[in-house]
Image 1 (tube, rainbow, N blue to C red):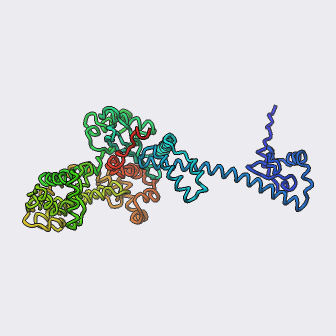
Image 2 (cartoon, rainbow, N blue to C red):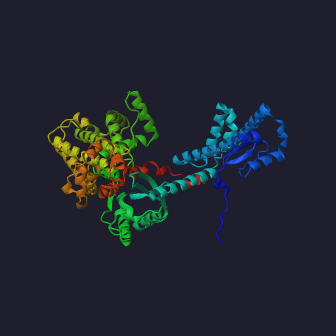
Image 3 (cartoon, rainbow, N blue to C red):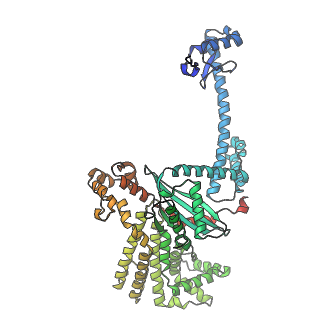
Length: 565
């Protein structure tokens, strides 16, 4: 027996007719007919159902004829619209109150403020609202900003961000990670894990993946277990990991149980080739280590002792500031030098050099003369150190500029190395043009300064050997039309030849940004090997400086648990 299909109302494509409004006082609302009189809805859109409802419950409305009937329908429609607007307004107000609570919570989290400050923020907002717009003050008072609400809001936002990163990471064709471990204000080791990945459409994502507290030891195997846990949480594929950037600590790059070694072991156990996995040292950290090789201990020791004598004693400090005001100095005070914030060294030296005469007079007044300030060779060393640290600070500022890719960062290093060689040769000839502070002095040992520059140059060559080894790959990625094909990997040579002969792509490459070229114009289907190569290089940690500045600027502001909870 053949089965019969039941008729479905949804499949009949019934439409509401305007005349039913005039005849039966019905309108369509949310795909169902609504009675304007009693506000009941009819489940099935059928003229018989509408007519029966009208004749059964509202037959008395037959007395409305012509213009009276039309006016009555319009009045009923206005009442329905007003009721809808009332509900919608209350809903919008409630949503805005919750949204405001999330906005304040986000600000508190971003600025690492105690969660209890939410109540203080609410008190301020309420007071301001009563002055500027009193009619909104009752809405402001409804915003919940207690510490427990702030905690829930931040947890919800963190969960949403984690889910978003997880969804984005699932589309990565290749990614790099950056690892850095440091200690916060509560003496708890914190492992920061950053990720930069690229999908098939060359969309790049760069995020702080996790900040893992490490309560016990911070050995290589401990850090690796944390990395492995994060990979599991975010469903990251080991085979798509192409580069690792570290802070160069033994626990990271140790030859036996370092994190890098253990990651390579994990890859090998999963039958993944580790030859293509490259390891880089944070570029700003390396630049800082190079800068520290410039000792000049006899200069730094005297200056540090002098500044500490002045600034570490409240009476001396206030007297020195008053002395500077009396002599109409261009500066109001000396600056401290902090080992962690290495940029402060150059600023401190420059300020001390500018105030050297005032400092000498003040120290004589205090019965603590500084004979070095009258020593010409020592002043020449100070002048040279002022200029050299200024050059190093300028390099550091270039490296910290946002939006740069790895080949651009390495380009700054290479240009500085060329400058060092130029300055060395010029100082040997007695040319101090690029050392304007040193120009004001005479009878100094140019050869010793040239030797210092030579030592610094060798330090740069040693420190940045890992970037030197990657230079060929960086050149292929950044300048594929100019690279020497014979020096390229054998697997890329054929596609490079075809690419370099494509004049249309070559002209477009010179007119737009590098990432825009690979994302919008590069023919992925014609050059599959170059595409895979570009994806791996595009996923290289673009902002290597983020790790160098993260703990310096943010980790010290991590909220104290006692304050927040």
